[in-house]
Length: 203
Image (cartoon, rainbow, N blue to C red; front, top):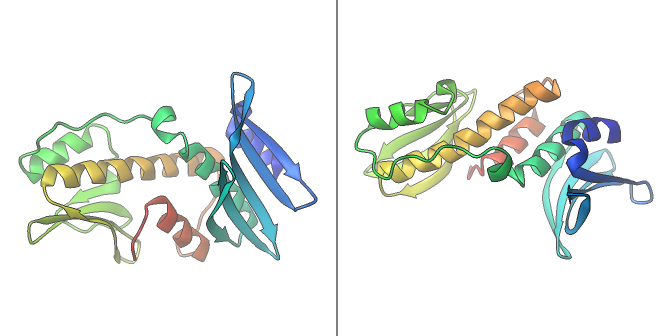
């Protein structure tokens, strides 16, 4: 477990194997100084893997996974995502987008066009749908079931920015799957749980 995580996270993190509690603790390391204020914890408990974040003494449970390799992988992703805006900044959209065609053209400049759609539902993609002049952003899964991410966007521009944020995260996630060389089954319970957490799915 430690070796896989170390290779994935690099030297920017300080990793501790706490055998007494059967858990792994990860702290960020900047210029040789270990940050003790924020700790990420992966705990093995009766064949379940629980992911936590401790921030200045406050412990928050992120999620529970059941497959060991998947849990280690997403634990690493969760840690990387804590610095997502720094390690993977994205281009900013223009302040006003007039129509769907303009939105798609703007977004296609920096987003994978296979992972998003506007005014239509597309399998395994972040979609932006106009519902009675409210722009709803959601994820359409491999079974073409739409899961809401945000349903209170009053303008196309606002909806497009939300879509850009989550598609950018999803692109990074897909990239990390290739980098980590892990095979994930999209029908697996753990995978669906990961997407709910990663994309902040409401249903």
